[in-house]
Image (tube, rainbow, N blue to C red):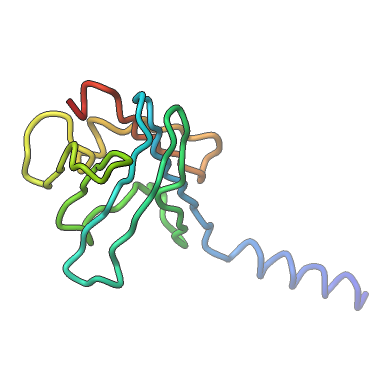
Length: 132
């Protein structure tokens, strides 16, 4: 009887917990160049740099939310996103307010995949025409 009551208590505890949603956001370099992507923030400790070889994909952001049902990548901390080639030349600068294909526009230019009910995978692809 003691084991049964312990089991019932454990079931009640786990069933009352809020579910956790997880996020994985990746950036793919479909260009012919190796790229450096700088996420610029007014708070330098929040800035981020990703290096992506031609034809490769790198993780941009991952995270989780307790009780959340929809997660998407967040670029709110960044003032701009700068794409450079290996020589350090600036190829493209994304600002939040710019029109056209923009890394900030999650709903329009990121590909979303939901492999399970609470797991969200996002992909942003940088192509040759994006940096020319």
